Length: 65
Image (cartoon, rainbow, N blue to C red; front, side):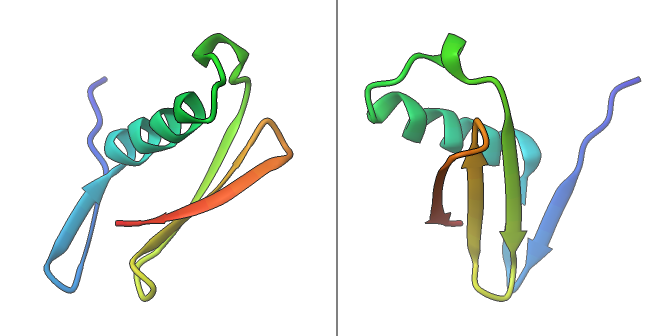
């Protein structure tokens, strides 16, 4: 089954794929390898236009959407 999930708020639109790709880019830019990425939790707060994330239960951060 093909599924698409989008969040739109205040004229901005994003989806799960775009958020996960950004998190992977951040992970790689910090010198890590994708194969070492075992879990990702992402929290999108539209009112702040930010996405917060936790990688491998200990690496935390955020970015603007």
